[in-house]
Length: 215
Image (cartoon, rainbow, N blue to C red; front, side, top):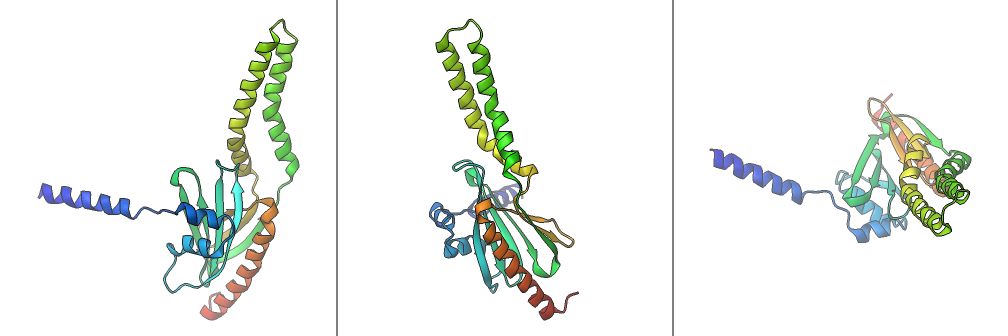
């Protein structure tokens, strides 16, 4: 009996590994070019077979290239959905049925706060260099310290930007009745795509409510 249980557990573990959610690098590359077929392929693994896709869109990179997370949106005849693809195979999916959407918000924060925040980050190596420059220390040592502190600031920059946007939303926030709000990050230059998604979603929601007779 113990052997059978162990065998079943191993079999389930192998099946779980085989069923791991994966997005091929070639598909992801095409999707970041706003290729609708590639983005549709990413979402189809989460959707019903008979579900019709109305609109898909790449909404940008949160953070810096190579470090940030990529955001994709999809609108079907039943739901609005979001896929976030991060580093090391991280994938998150979220959706909400159209008839359960209460309201939608589009955010575009000011750039000033971001510039000021990044300025403070790089002010640290500059202030360190100036303080050493005024002290009786070798100029070579000053340059080494400047290079090291600037390098640390550059390494922290992508984390810092992601942390900034965690508290300063940019994109679409969709309130879903009885569920978790859907937040879809959007690069500022791609907010017109977010607006298009909102417009089509509104029309699709009204049509679905009429079809189903949902109040």
